[in-house]
Image 1: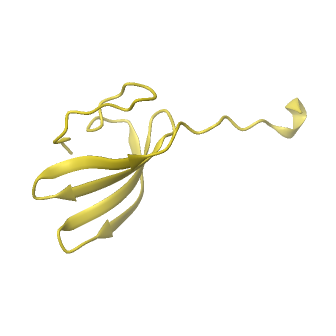
Image 2: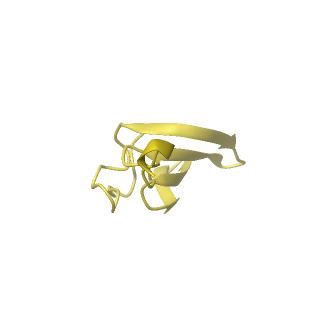
Image 3: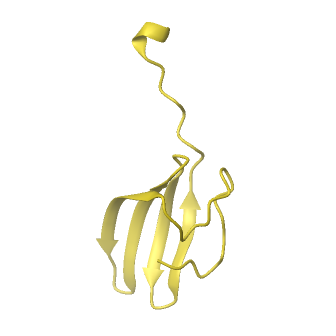
Length: 72
């Protein structure tokens, strides 16, 4: 998937169109598809993929590390 914006994750600097990212869900739309993905840093992203390419239209902050019960 090639990003049409050339943007990078503001949290880790990884290019939007590069691996690693995990597809969380994918939904077809009339114009293409919407994908919810997770960046390598844990940021949840909403990507629109259509005839113009791929662009991230929304993203969260990185995932907070979970603490184990033993470390509390």
